[in-house]
Figure 1 (tube, rainbow, N blue to C red):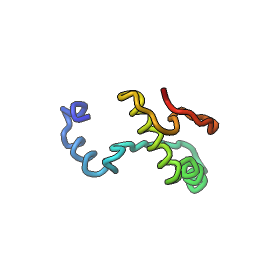
Figure 2: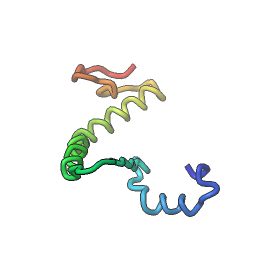
Figure 3: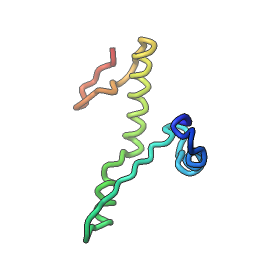
Length: 93
């Protein structure tokens, strides 16, 4: 990421200081702009908040991601698939 800011190291330093939220995921900041009049900010905020994963869902995602990475890079898979849609249990191969 640093190479993208070669001409603006102040912005790079600001991002690293203010926006780098976690060591696990790094900078995943997203910005949305809503243009219009009479927008209900509370309703928009509630709708966006409803899209966030619960801690349990994040724990499952971490486990599925680790299983996928293990299968992809070591050939060893031992758990639910990252691509397990509709709760059909299988292991990445």
